[in-house]
Image 1 (spheres, protein in one colour):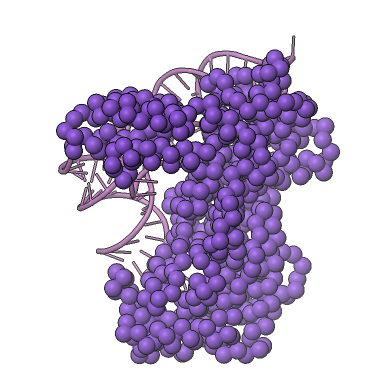
Image 2 (image 1 turned 90 degrees about the vertical axis):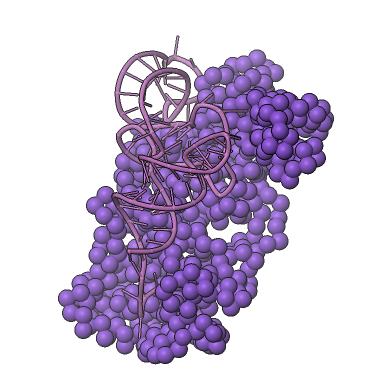
Length: 555
RNA sequence: GGACCUGUGGCUUAGCCAGGAUAUAGCGUCGGGCUUCUAACCCGAAUGUCGGGGGUUCGAAUCCCUCCAGGUCCGCCA
């Protein structure tokens, strides 16, 4: 509804002024929508902006009212629009329907890759920033109507995995030991690196393993495969706890076995930018890269970048839009990948880069065993959440309390991570992660539960799709923005916008809740407010689910 | 040394790409509000050289230049 109104008003301004851009902007406290077009016309017309604004209002107000029911007026140089009753009632009708905010089905197929952590230790609080950005975008794309496949790209043949395989053999570790596989692998990996640091000559054994696995040696392949699988099983456990699921796990080694890597390397070797001596590398200086892009080692084995090219060519052929979520450490290699694909006429991926999460004592390192695992984070947050639920709802059965605590914990974790823009590097803070108040997931869940509770107590009522008074109108107008927010997230790849929106919607609902009685109001007001509570409830539910957070009905 | 990202009240943070109305919220501080629809809440107050300096513009947190600080990268690792 909001977007439709913007389009209509934009077209009217365009018609009237002849300018391509109607200069629409948020109206802030003054209006629902505003245009700063008077500033840009000032030079041409040689008139003061406030004068121009007044003239524009005079000429378009009537047509705007006719087509949208919005009020047009000027404050100084700003042309302002305030939406009217029809807008509010249309919004309420839409927002009380199941699936509010969903876009119509789009033909464009999207593939999104996220997490893709190396299987050499458990997911830690840095990795899950990737996971949560990726999963939230996934949910937004699906909400917007795009068919989307989520992939996990498994590095099952890199140096790190060779180190794990070597570590298992040299430490005689029991790869089938009980416990969570990813944590088990981390122990082996950390210990193996300790040995390699002490005696670098041991690296020869790692190199040998990498040659064997690339040449297809069956024993080495299974030596790699078993720990990778154990680790991945651990990842899947952790991801499931966070409401995250991948549609497909794509194995890096497949692009060696099916010959795709060889094919792309051969294509590249014929390019004028290719440099072939002992190694194969590519000169990307035309794209502004100083460093050449190395694709094959002198011992003939391929590097990660080569396999990644093959993977992305495959994705580009099977999907219309390719999106990767990558840590800031991949910026160079990621942009080199984009440039190379562009050079050979393939579709480069869109990449969302996110900056690092570090610990107060410094950056995390799986290799050095310096990290807080996602499992620890979840366990601790659940423990705190259970304490909280037990204090608040002692009458509930333990099973029920545990269930709520889990949903609250995941909500707190996911929200804490997604609310910050990806470009900001953050320091992990237990106090913030365990905060269930205000700018948190549980705060939004609570607003939803509160709305549910009111509606449950109300029983049946006659819906009334109207809003009256400041608080009601502000709330409806916020509800109206939900579809716009989803579409912004998808076009700009900025999932934090949804997090902020959901919190602001909860804020407005809480203010409304405290200011206006619902159940105790006289009948026609009660019906109207119950309809509004229901619209809010539904919008909060859709927003929470799109954030990957359970919309609890009680907490 | 070079490249990219970040720097907004004591702390955390939105706005920056597409410049425009008194810069967004939270935590913390101070003052209020639960026999009344779930207080994981609400209402109010105080707190700002938008890292520093230049420039462009009628107008800059936003664009350009420069400097400073933090992070990341610059491997025949991934």
